[in-house]
Structure formats: C-alpha cells, structure tokens
Image (tube, rainbow, N blue to C red; front, side):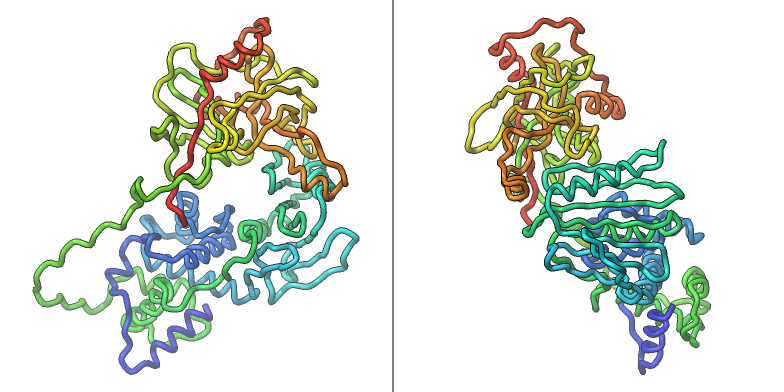
Length: 511
C-alpha cells in the first residue's frame, strides 16, 4: 500500500510523532456523520471498485452505503460493528487503486456532465458517426460518448433493450430529462446507457464491460453527475487523513517500525487488531467531562416547501400511490397539512407508496381488472402548478399508445393534458377505474428543436398493471372495480376523483 507507506515513513521521520486519534478512538465504532461529503464519496467509490457498491456516489451515507461497507468488512474477514481503523484501511486501499489507474472525476464541458475516468490507463479508440470511444487498457471497460438529439437517444436505449439476453430483466429508468437502461447481453457483457438532457442537448454515456469487470462499470455509472462535481480524493486535514496519520504512529508504537512500499494490508490489520504490547497508562483523575451534545437534527420549522405532486388513496388503511420522483429528497411529506409516512419507492417503476390515516370506508380508487385499450377514453386528476391553480384539476383525453417512449413497456402514452404537479395522479377509464398513474409529459420545446414540429398532448402514465404489481410487492392488495362497471357521466366521475385524490407536499431543509 504505497500511499499509506509514504505517510508511515513521513510520520516516522518526525521528531515527536503525534496523532489525532488515540488507540481507543481508532477502535471506536465508525460514525459516518463525522465525515465530509467528499470523504463519503471517496469511500463509496472505493467500495464500488471492490464490487460492493452499485448506487449513486453522492456522499449521502444511507443504509445502502453502510451495507456495502459491512459487506467489504466481512469479505476482509472483519467482524461487525465497523470500527474507525477499518474505514481507514478501506480508504488507504482505495487510494492505492485510485492512484494506480489515475482515477479522476472529469468534467466534459460540451456535454455538461462529469464522471470518473481511469486517466492513467485510458486510451482513445476510433470514433464512429455517433460516438466518441474510449477504453480502459487493463480491463474490458469501454466508454462511448454522444451529444445528440432525442431521436438518437431513443435509438440508443431501444438498441440497449433489444440486445438484452433472453430471460434477463433489464433495468430501466424513464423520466422527462433522464433515461437509464442497463442490460445483460450475450456472453455475460453488461451494457449501461444513461442520457441526460443538458444545456446543449442530450448527453449520453454508454458503458460496457465483461461481468468480471462489473465493479469498474458500477464505479463509473455511479459517478455520473450533471454539471461539474468535485474530484475523487481525500481532503487534506479531514477525518480520514487524520486517521491514516494516526494509524501510522500507532503501528510504529506497536513495533512495526520498518514501513516500506511493500507494507501489506494483512500486516496493518494484525497491528490494529492486537492491543499494544505495553499497557497505555491511565490518565490522571479529572472531573468528568460534560456529555457531548447530540448532532443537530433539522427541526420541522427549518424545512421549506420544495415541491408538490399528486397522490391517490388505494386502501381503506390509508395507503396512497404517487411517483417516486415526487417524494425524492423529501425530509417530510404532508397531505392536507399533516405529515405522512413514505413506505416504499421504486425508481424503475417511478412509483412510491405512502401512508396516511385510515380512509373512510369505500372511498378508495378501484383498479380496472384489464389493461386499457388503445384510443380508450381516459380522465386524469391532479394538482398541477400548485400555487397558481387552486383545487383539483381534471382533464380528459385518450390512450394514444400502449407503450411509452422508445417502446417502454412500463408506461403508456396518453393525450389528456398534464402539467408539473400532476405527477402521481390517477388516470381512470370511463367507468372511473384506474388504468394508469400519471408520470411525465414530453418536452415540447426539445422535440420542436429536434424535429421542427411541436408535439400536442404527448404525456405518459405508468400502466395500471405495473402499479398493481408494485402494490402487491409492498403488501397492499389493489381494490378491483367490476368487470362490467357502467360508464359514469363526467360530473360524477370528477366528484369520485375528488374524493380519492390528494395534493402531496415535499418539505426539506434548503441546501
């Protein structure tokens, strides 16, 4: 471990080495809240390189990051709970891997996105009419970059889906300004495509790697960020660098006083897991210190309204369906001014399940027992442009297509007008039965720029069958409407929708 060895050597050269952590503190349980966002992003990247982390490297240390850290520790033969010295070892090991390949977070200005590249071992390959191509020289990882228009984006993701190995389940995310498709291809190749709408058009990053190198692909895909983002590095003077310096002194005091470039992780583990040979003298008695104040947590009064959407009741127990993007980043969700709970969210479906107080008997949305047919009449309810428009908004249209953008089988296209804030609202048939959940509208300006024509009422809803599947997966049984339910007059239909549809508000501490 070259980096840690260099720090060890520098510390050994000091006349009177000092360190920020005592042995007891190094053995204390790890607390991610003490780290900066930059340090946590570095650890997430290191865990991805180790094949333990495959999510966004955003520096937000949640359950997924902690589980990945624990998986790394178990793989290294370390028992929980995770201690500070173990995190220091992970960071030092990751720093060596980052340095070996020259990994850096690079901003591609024309595309207005950033992502990780192995700059020390990266070569440019012949470009095509559509892509700039790059390769990692010591693995199967390949990059293809494109800045193009909507038709090209649709083509990229349609190809990715068509190349999926039969019997495998592709991962798809479809939002108004970002599309992600990840598939397993023949012979174990992983293909990942992400397209973001940025200031100059659609920026697409297509990654491929053999399954044995999926950890590298996950590290790159998780690093993709809109705009500029900070580098993959440990900040000087941070908790982790202080921990590395402290480990150097502790190891030296434990008798490992000949560090060199071939110092091994196993040797350092041994030095940290065994107590010092000479007992540490007890400090002189002193007055007990006051207990440290707990970390400050945001109070509800600190939170501000960040956005809103629509939800609708699907059970008498108070369950409501909305979109995952409506609840994303919310610290508090409110309906009718009272807090409600987020129970589940699925980004691939873009659906979320929230829980309010029990609903009045019978006042819940009923789902159609069969999918809606093409050209079937449809009515949409929601709370668009909250603050400008007041009350429930109801619009009518039809099912334009049984599939969404680029043949997406999760969504269907509808012509009923929707606006920001409609997301998560019910789309019902002429009998008032749910056949979809409103999710997005097509960007008319973008399409006009790409095709020269302005699209009219091209909007999308998650198919009702997918919503029912999502509910079943989360322990809520959908209420089904009658097969031969009569057609409702428009006024009655609007009143029924008003009874089950709610404005959901997202609150968070402003950043």
